[in-house]
Image (cartoon, rainbow, N blue to C red):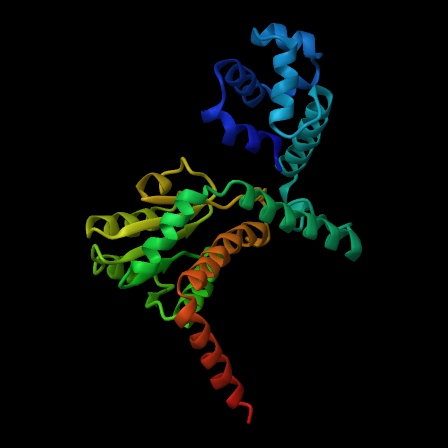
Length: 286
């Protein structure tokens, strides 16, 4: 997990002394690399023990380990910033062997799953699942890579008897959002949460009284602020990426969990529906 992303995510819930440490690291990460724990404590106005406790709070053994992780992250970021097209995708470079490429990809996808799972707010997820389970219709929207996750979730919901809608066309998404009612739910999937069309669709659904569930990478982004329920999907993808690989992995972690929770809610009818669909498809091969 990115050290800077982890600090940013934790910032709102930190104590005041910890916020001083966090803000300094976020504002001057390069300066921190040249400091000892005592000099860093002095410049931030906290104790050395507070520095150690902060390092441990973000998953490091101590201040030296945090500096090492921060140094690696800054080197990686500077490499992509100075020559972004040197990378094939995130940390994967054209010089990597197939084995190394596979290892890096596995690490990236595993990290996305683990960090997304760790950040799940389960009471909010539970309320979101209950809203979907009770909905008359569920509209699921997303574009590009997020659109694939939207289609996949829509198909899964249909399999267990939930009426869901998922259209790729942006105009249709907005038009459909305007037909929703207080009995309906809209699920918006967007890693960045900054796309204007996603915000318009969400605002349209909200104006009609529908519950809006957002699956996104940052609970403070513009799209998240519209939502009734926000579910975070976490990945370390940077600006230069060949595809939305780890962000889609993170989104699928949330969408698959929603599906399984709904299967649990509807177990009396869901399992027979899934089985019947499986048997009907198998008969196509007879």
